[in-house]
Image 1 (cartoon, rainbow, N blue to C red):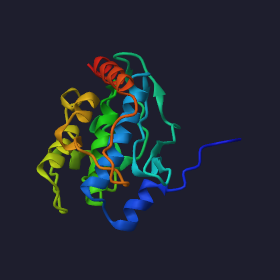
Image 2: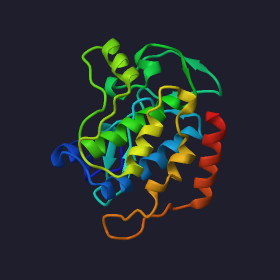
Image 3: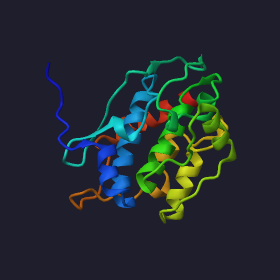
Amino acid sequence: MVMEYAGGGDLYHLVKKSKFLTEDETKFIFKQVAHGVAHCHCRSVLHRDIKLDNILLDGEGGVKICDFGVSKLITRNEMIQEQCGTPAYLAPEMSSNQEYRNFFVDIWSLGIFLYVMLQGTVPFKASTMEGLYQAQMQMNIKFPVDISPEAQNLIKRMLVLQPERRISLPEILSHPWLRNIIGPDGMQFEAQDEDDDDHDFKMSLSFQR
């Protein structure tokens, strides 16, 4: 069996080692992950377990999304009621065991994912699913580590209780906070293939809505 080598380990251990990442470090990683998730969504794949542990690093600034064990190939407006994934990253509709549709649960997980990179912890904590849901309902999101208003805005637009009101992936990728990204080598970060990106954006947006 031949597989790609992720010499940089996983993102969880990187964040744990440094407690939290800077905004520049986070932007470079997060935008790649968001592109990857958009690629999955436009091919009707719902990941359902986006978290730091499932992002591998190649040692040169590149990321790999892994662990599709609970992912699902879905159809437009299909109603799902499978509670799976990592509790701290679950959207409210999953933590309360309600039905959900489309890709909104992945958008919530991306919001938690971004928060953890910048804050070093999760925004909602509880020992039970019911407790987690109640904490989510209160929406008391605090930022103990000082970050820019743009970063806070993006997180809050993903962590919205009503699934249909969450920011879409095309909107995430065009958000002001994700402009002017500088990579580890000091070079400006740009998508490899803008035509493919535009296609992913349009497909993801049309499917979500």
